[in-house]
Structures are given as C-alpha cells and as structure tokens.
Length: 375
Image (cartoon, rainbow, N blue to C red; front, side, top):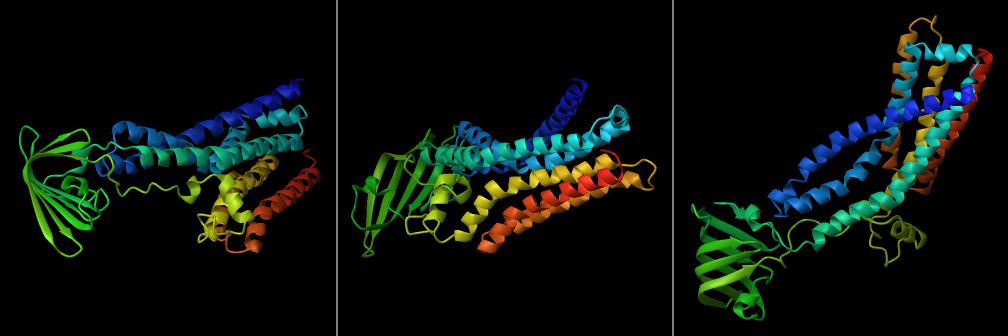
C-alpha cells in the first residue's frame, strides 16, 4: 500500500510538471501566432470576434507540437528534484523497485501517446478546419480597416480601392474603385462581357459592409474595348459577396484524417483533392500517427538518470547529456519526418525506429540495473 502511494505521488508530480511546462510553451507560442493573425483584422477586414475565435481554434494545434518536449523536460526536472531533495535515496532505502519506476514512466508516456494521437487524428484537423470555415463563411468585413488613406488596397480579389482623404466626419473624399473580375457589374445593369469596371466618386461613407458613394461615374470597358460611362448622384456598394485574398480552402493539415487515409487507400486517384501532393499527405499522416511514438523512447532515455551514482566524477553533467541526447532525437525525428513521404521504406523506418530503439533501451536499462544490483 505504501509503495503504491509513493508511485502515485511520483506520477502526479511528473504530470503536474508536464501540464505546467506544456501550458507555458503553448501560451508563448500561441500568443506569437495570435499576433501574426492580426492581419485578419488589419488587412482582411474581419471583425475582432472572428479574429479571437480563429485564434482560439488554433490553440490545440499549437499545444500538440510541445507534448514530447514538455514530457521530456517534466521527467528530467522531476527526477532531478527528487534527487536533490534526497527523496530518491529514501525510496531506494525502503526497497522501491527502479524497474517499477521506469515502467511507470513508460506507462505515462503511453498515455501521452494516446492523448497526442487523438489530438492529431481528430481534434486538431477539426478545429483547424472550423477556423478555415469561419473565414470562408463570414460575409461581413470591416471596410474601415481595409480602406487606407492615400494607399491602394487590393484586399478583395480583383478589386482595388483608393481614397485620397478622409475628413473630420469620417467621410471619404475622391474615391477610386477598380474591378477586373466583374464583381461590380450589378451597378451597370449586368452589362454582358464587361471586362473592367472603374468607379470615381467625389465622396463616400462607410456603413458596416456597405459604401455609399455620392456624385460619381461608373466607367465600364467590354471585351471589344468599348467604353461606357454612367453618372450617378448616389449609389450603394455592398462588399458582402466580395472574395478577399485569404486562403479559404482547407489545407492538408486542416483536412480530416479519414479523407487523407482514403486518398492513400485509393492510391491518390482523381477523386483525391491532394493527388498532386502525395508526399505531403503521407508526411502529414506520419506526423499525426508516427511522431507520438517517440514519446516512450524519451521516457526510457530519461530513466537512465535513475542509475545515477553520486560518487561518480562529473556525474552532475549527466542530466545535461541525457537531455541533449533526447532533444537530438526529437530534432532528428522532426527532420526525418520531411522524408517519410518520399518512399515506402522511409515511411516504415520512421514508424519502426522509435519502437525498435525503445525495446533496445529497455533491455539495456534492465541489464545496467541488474549489473549494479540496483533493481
């Protein structure tokens, strides 16, 4: 009973450190990413509400990337803390089994593997796709943030805005709007074959997603290079149906795992949206399923701190050496991930390397503990 309480205590301390480190890393990285998303407000005219929702939906994707490193740091920090406070010495004195503690580390790592795979396979693609859908389905844009004084703005695809001045009442003076894709043809009575539409107005007022223009001209040029001018005293221009330059189609990392697996199963047939990105699809699947498999390997590397001997010279450097080794493996795993989609051999090696090394390291740990009689 006492030993079980001690094992539970060790597990809880490791998990507490893991959660603290993971949330710290995630908060920093997520804040940096949220700052990068400010272009949605400034350049693309989305509302602050859309910006915050979009940023929040990217939280889990950011957190997932730090799971392996956070677990490695939590193990090393926890073991170092136990040792510094003489807790490990007391545990060995009362006859605690070091292999048992290694197994606990390994079981925690397996739990984290399942946790990260669930995030990678289901939650992250769904939240990322939702964030993309949020941009795609949002019609109203904050036009005031898009239109800049004395600057050409081409936020909307095929449409360019230019405003000379803005007075103290917020009215726009000398407004120029050019359309090259036919988005403004409704203003000219749906003229057929319109190739280019240009609007000049002396004054304009922005109200929500609309621009009210006063005293201006709509000039159209058709494919025959014929020019037609329409004069107006007042007209309204709605931007709800304008398409901005923000990418609205889901990227590979935002696509469901089911759809990616179907592409692989059907050998990237014409029905697959990513038939020209076979290597990238396989790389993404390797990241979702294969990358978490390196977590148990990290737990076994960190377990070598349990065979620490105080009398050994330069032993204080051991934790740095172990961390460097484990971190190097993480870096290599990230690098080799890029090559996993190049061939079937690379794909198999990427998946089986952490499993094979975990078995080898576990056997080495047992041998060392037996030889030093510290089991």
